[in-house]
Length: 258
Length: 307
Picture 1 (spheres, each protein chain N blue to C red):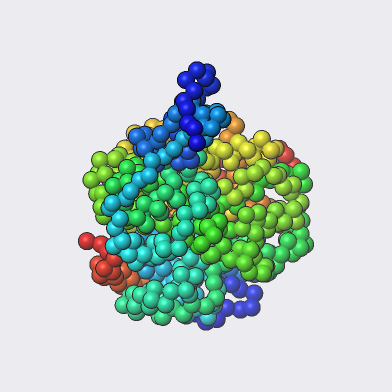
Picture 2: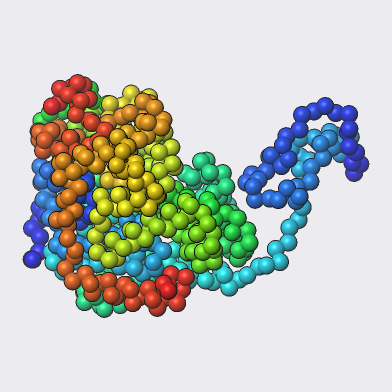
């Protein structure tokens, strides 16, 4: 095979690696492209002259895989054969290209923490629409695999959560949910909304924004915001709470609480 | 409390429907009763977990299943009807996971035992009000009860996600009588049966931002503006929903969505059961249309003088 570089061609060339699906997953250095390439007399400039260097993962960690498989949400990680139907169906991917469920599951399968760490800023964006789980040919349940991913991030990258404003908010709002659902057995939506707004630093918006105030005022006026007072707690909920706390302290899995 | 009568069904209200989304709760009950089934609240219910407790192992199953136990012990009912799609998802998920995983079921039962509750035996199931009314009574029954057909009202049905997905939990396409998971049509049929005109707009089963409606407004607003503007462009007068979370994203947040994406996203949002109640002869006060932030009253008055 005769390979020559056609230096005279004026053909416009795409951005480096532009044709690669999920381009962000590959380092710049690993992509080899010739601007103008001729093989056996045929000009193959364009997408056919893109090559990705072989990568070797030297930090393959199987114990990590078992850790995920033991959780309720990650129990089917072994089934994934990386077809990419989840990413193709995803609601979030078109909005945030770096959110790629298939790739996340791959990283989890390989135990590649180093790579996962790069995606902590988008990994929390799953909206739970379950299109992926509906279409997955192996019933991996990728939507819940994203919950397993959140557990991993919580365990291995607590610093990332602290240093990222949005991740911190996500954590804080989750804590509000948890306090209400597990603590009181019922969810006070009006309180959830205002507490979450405060956590997000939108206290002024809560008081001054006309739309925000409009909805709150309406619900105060027609009594809905206060109907929460009538909700109360389930009878003998403290027993449920104690049993739940006890379980969460002793699971021995990623789900365990400190 | 004793067993239910033949024309009664055990009903799980959920937190949203008892407070902010009372319009959905009340209209669901009105419509069901008119069609011949009385929905009876189970006593002492607890929150289903609203999708935020999934990372807590068996606890995510405990929350819904404790209610199934109550339905069984208090009402002698294996099934539980609910109107909220998020609750429906949490219940169907828990029941299916408990059925397929004995170890997980044992864990749930040990929490139940410690909490002084009765044992859960996987049987029966959770039923979404739309599927329940469709299969128990059907659009023909709705047509029979219609005294004020919503003639000329163009409605965009919005199913959202969890009513029909994922079929591993909801059994859409898998069990006879269930809706289609990619192209659900039960709401279409009910809307036609009460005389409304159904609008096709392409976002019937898209997401409103779901789990992250509170935490991630940016994403939710973008998704909702697509749905609202597409429905509006297709000529819809109102968007009909069957989930309080969708309503929170599309209705309560609508003023903020309009501020960001413009008037294209301005479209009144109502619950399917509110429209059915109206068609069945209940007043706009009884159907509580004034609870909706996006103000459906005006278009209902203008379009067909329904109120």
